[in-house]
Amino acid sequence: MALTKLGGYTVILSALALFVGQVLEDAIGQTGSSIAQIWASLGFACATVVFCTYFRKEDEDNGILYLIPILALVGWTASVVGEGMRIPLDQINIESVNAVASISGAASFSAAGGGFLANALLGYYIFGKPQFSQNVIYRIVTVVFIIGSLAFVAMGIVMPFFAEGREAATAVGEYGSQTFPFDMSVLILVWMPGMLATLIWSIWTGVIFVKK
Image (tube, rainbow, N blue to C red; front, side, top):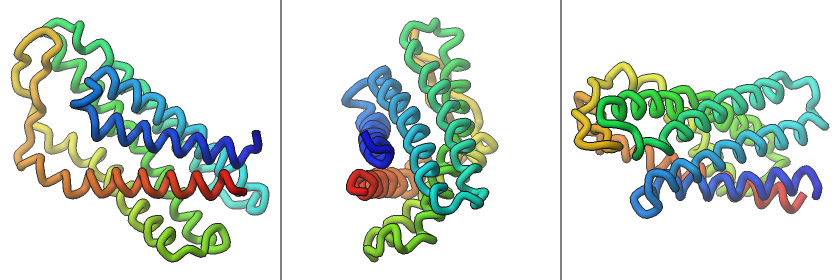
């Protein structure tokens, strides 16, 4: 299989897995969600390395193409670790479940900021190469994708400073909801557009690479 096709198919499957794991958690359960996001993170890391390897063939001296894979590998590995910690939450006793849930959340979201930053930088690089795709709609989606990725990075940095702890665990495996001094529902205005932009851009970019 050609390198471009490997990267294209990988990023398409990863985007679908991330979207399912994030948006359909209630339908597939916590364990299913974590497994989907683990494979999505591994896929994004792999696809990012492949994409940067492809671009370095013509732009070998561009330092950003060496930085992006490092950020991706570090960030998405952190996401894998955090999501992996969530899998046994249903088996953890009531005294420990809140602590494990908090550590898992910090690793899978805050520490994964490198992965989202790698996404943003990759989108920025591709946007600066109009020859990659001259489709105006694709370039608009790329801009939205960059903004959404940077918003995820900002949320991962800022949210821990606003967290006020967790409510008491209610049963074995049932961790308490994290509390914040504002209505968390407002974050849906950032989170959902970002997720949709990531899904659409990743699939579209993957299709472009598959055809190369």
